[in-house]
Image (cartoon, rainbow, N blue to C red; front, top):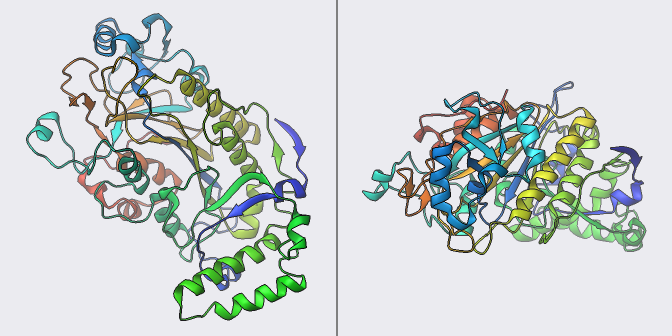
Length: 462
């Protein structure tokens, strides 16, 4: 990491966009918060969506002879060579021997973090209404709606529930607990995608983008750092203020949003003066959309000025949303995606360590679903259960949590060639949310269907 600072003009130029916001009067008041007292340690969750359904069964594969033989016979042409897998030196739980599983050979950065105890694997997690076995499903037990559809399953992951009863993302619901009047800086979206995870709270996610816009150009139209100080800006403010209490709710909401956009540059003045620049973040080969490395680099830059968020906006907790496209692997196993994910996460964790905050930031992955056990001759099709990864200094890493499924033809852990999850989305996410600061009672409020499962948390957080 270098300590080269961006100029205010460079970083203030990052365009900001947010959906409808609460009244500005709420911003003027001291925000009523759960964790805003002076001295409260800062914590952040960084959520990385592997959009499209990652084939995790070629990211973590068996290495023990009999299990590998089953894996090889099941995956056929897409099975990885046994001697190419990166072995684990230890596995503390689940009764697994260290030589039971290994990582794909291009996941060196993630493998190193695992060995250092800074990365954990969450086995076979997915959307569930209740615990089910293969026999239960075959006999008509309830399963999530539209199980193998990208948009529906991705939505259920981001809503933190497969019941259909939730209409706010789990990130938004957590924000409502921490900031009872809302906080527009709690949920931060750095992706090029809309996301349900941060939708529906008292404030919508703030969107940071890496498209630079000159403040001088904005000033010429009355929207610069003077925040409407020009004659045109004053006219706009007067018009919008008149509509803040309009009986037309749509007009009032629009006016609140535009007023916030006019005043936001004042609140951002100097916020990023001391933002840091980092090395090691790259664009991926064949990467679609905004590169994962650039999104994580932007998160690191924002975290480098976290003290400003704490001082100005009483924001001691933040959730960041990051999206890596391209995981719908019907025609390949996307080896380049796997390697790029590993390198990008490694660079991000290195940046956090350089800033001395790796114990304060936890990164976790989620995906639409896993992939089918068997090959379709070129890649794999839509699945159900999937492995997830959790990274950070506060993670009880170097272990696999939950139960690893049997990877073999006619597996008792699979239904219609798809793994049946044995760890619910709610249990996985609640574990991270508890570390973040939610009480046991609040976990039940944020994840109402958590009570349907025997385990509320998994223990992968310190």
